[in-house]
Length: 120
Image (cartoon, rainbow, N blue to C red; front, side, top):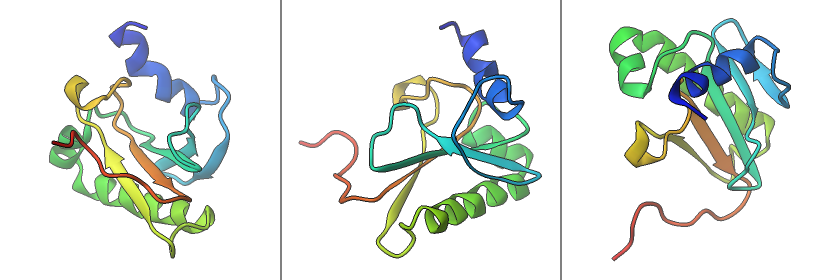
């Protein structure tokens, strides 16, 4: 997939052009299940308006970033992991594993999660 395709993928999901298992949506955000889950609960939370990554979003629209985090918490509640614990991850650019260049938060939970990053 080219970067230009990747940049529009989540916009197409939000627009309903690509099917998704929607967990939650509101005026500013859209949450749907990851097609390659890395945990029992793995939901992606995206702003409806596209920003390349979390740093760009934070600089341009801090309120929208706050809304994204609030939606992540709402997803954790809806998925039943708010009490047991969950992880919210933003990958920023290629070295961090970002493959779709529309900022998105991964909400992961529902099981004991391992450590992150390289060990040793």
